[in-house]
Each structure stands twice: as structure tokens, then as C-alpha cells.
Image 1 (cartoon, rainbow, N blue to C red):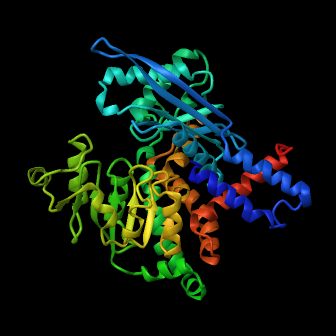
Image 2 (cartoon, rainbow, N blue to C red):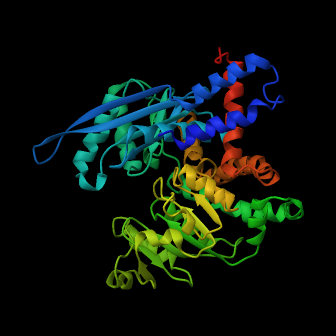
Amino acid sequence: MVSNTSTIIEQSLDALLDDQSFLPELSGETRRKAFTSLTSILSTPNHIHKSFLRIALEDGKVTRIPAFRVQHNNIIGPYKGGIRFHESVEEEEVSNLAALMTLKNALHEVPFGGGKGGVVIDPRKFKVKELNQICRKYVQYFSQIIGPEKDIPAPDVGSGEREMDWMMGEYKSIHPGMKYRGSFTGKSVVNGGSLGRRQATGKGVYFSLRYMLHDFTKDKYKWLNERDNIFAKTVLNHKDKSLKIAIQGFGNVGSVVAAEANKCNFLNNKVVAVSDRNVTLHNSDGLDIPELIKYTKSNNGELPIDEESLEEANVKATICDRDDLLTMDTDILVMAALGGQIHQENMKQIKAKIIVEGANAPITGEADSYLSEKGIVVIPDILANAGGVIVSYFEWLQGRETQFYSEEQVYEKLYDKMQHTFETVYPQYFGDAFPLRQNCYIHSVMKLSTILFKQGKLY
């Protein structure tokens, strides 16, 4: 199956082929050949590394766990991307996510290429010492291809600062005397991590929504009204409205989005539904987000699942099936769980008119096309969830300079960088017929293609 990312890369290049103002140095047959080269380069990874980690379990058994590191493209800088710990990890998914990282970094002008890692495990089923061994073995097996100037991993689904600390420690042991602080990002602050890194993705996700519905709409209200654009009409219909938000996933991203929405003074919004792998909680008057966050911190990150635990959490809510959240009657749907959640089977039941992708690729290509045709605004992963990699870049810089920013400075720099991107892509989005994802991809592909051309990589 061709990945959604590869398909949109090809579509973006097709859209640019006849635009002679882009790469005007190329024309005729030379131009067609160069664009064929670009399609091939950007749709495929440079390297796919795969290994089986040999792990001795505490019960005496030995198991071998599949692990991946995909390096998509490094024309802008070192490969960069998280390591996902999940039982659903497979090569095509990791390759797709690595390509997405290349495009995301290009879009936000972060000087990294795209990479991604994966380990096929459910981390909840392993003891701490076993997880430590898995992390160290991952670094041992891929030690020659990662490093501060080569490929810089970070946390992803199922991994966090603890795992990055372990991995950096192992990298330091394998490469004595070499610079090691920038070998991994998403570390604990005491190990050279950046303040605000854990909250960065969620804050960026909510900021992308707030900026569109408040800052941009307020500044461009007259201009938007003059547009004959289905997406502009959707946004204007939500201006100054009391907004109901549903959030799928209540981990590092979803819980932060909920907290940001709960305290926001710019939008009149309330979180009416949240879900995790077990349950959906719904309250049409708005959920008590601070109490839910407090409860999850004391209960392995999981939401209350019955009346007894709701009472313990001091939260009023109706308990629903975990998948009910997607089709609830809300204005905004934030996707902060896993990929492929909105698909052919449920896309016609989606009621939200604005969807924000906090997770990577939570909407399949077919569903994405259907939603766009209906005028539903999708703020895509490449745009909305870049807060993590942007602050990872700040962490990498701080490690090199051994000067560290305050948490307030980190968020200020994050918002400045994301706002710069919004100011580039939002006017294009509301000014033409392309969905926002396509606009973002075209912008990324233009930057990558220009650099590849100037470095002579198309011949």
C-alpha cells in the first residue's frame, strides 16, 4: 500500500510541474526528468535499518524484538525523529513517519532531516530492568548510524525522557570522549533536556487551533469574508462561537491540549469529551480537566473507567465506549492518539467541522479527501504537532552552547516559530482550493526541491 505521505508528495510535485516560476532554471524535457528524480528521492527513504534486539527477560527466557531506524532524507541537516514503542510498529509505518518528519522540518525551517525509529513492544508488559535493557540494546545495535551530527532520536508513543536518558547514557559509554549531549533529545532536564519539552507538542497543537480561530480570523476577517473558499466559510462560522472540543488520547499531547483549552482566554471553548485506550468520558457542560489530569498522574496515565473511579477523581461524566468520541456532536476534534483513526468505515459519521491532528497520520488518505470535500478544516500533523521537534531543536542547540533557556523563553520561541509558519501557509490555504495539508506539503516540497537542485542531487 502506498503511504499517504508518498501520495501527497507526488501530488505536490505534479501541482508544481507546470508552475514555471518554481525552479525557472528547468524547462522542457530537463524539467520533467528533474521532477521524476524529485518524486523518487522524496518518496523513498535513504536508509532502512532493521534489527532484532536480543533481550534476556527476568523470568530467564530470551526474546528477540524487532526494531527499526528509518532515515528518510538529510539534505537540510541530520536525521531527526522519535522512537516509537508500540506493538503495532511495522516498517511501512516507520518509513511513512520518517518522510513526514522530513517535510515537517522543512515546513517549519528546522535544520534537520527526517528519521524515525520503532520497537515492536507493548512497554506496559515489560519490567523496568527489561525496558532499560531494550533501550541499551537499541543504541548498541544502531550505534554507528546515530549521533549528534548524524541522526538524533527523541521520544515518541510509548517512550519518554526516562528512555532517552538511558539511551544517551549508553551512547556515551559506547563513544567515550565524544560529544554526547546532542545524541538524543527529550531527555530529563538534569541530563541536558530542555524545559518545556514534554508539553511542547500539546501546546503547539492548541496554539495552531487558537491562532487560526482567533488571531488570524480577527486580523483577516474582512479578507476571509471576501474569499469564495469553503474552508474560510467553515472558520468564519466558528468565530466567537461557544466551541465544544473532544480530544482523542489523554497522554502527553492530549492532556496538555485539554489544559491549554481549559485556561484559554482567547477562545470561548470547553472540553466536553476525552478518551484513552479504555474509555470515553463525556460531559456536555465541560469536563473538570485539572481533576482528570491529577487523577491520571496517580493512575498510570489512565482515565477513570467506572463510577467508583469517577467519584475518586471528583469528576462528573458519562462513561461511553472509547470509539464513541470520534462521532460525537462537537465543533472541534483533536486527534492525539494513534494513526489511522478516521477511515472509510467511520468518516461519514464525523460531526466536527474542525479537526486538529496532534498524532501523526490519524486520518487515512481516503478519509482526508472526503472530509476536505465536505468543507471540514483539517489542521494537519505536519503543521500542528511540530512543537516537539521544534523544542527538540532548541534542546540540541542548548546542549551545544551549554546555555539553557527558561521555560517561558522556550514557549516564546516555540510560538514565534510556529506563528511564522502559520503566516506563510494560512493565507495560501484560504486563498486557493487546496486543503491545508496539501498547502503545507507543497511548501515543504518546494524548499526541499530547491536545495536538492542547488546541490546538484537531481542528475
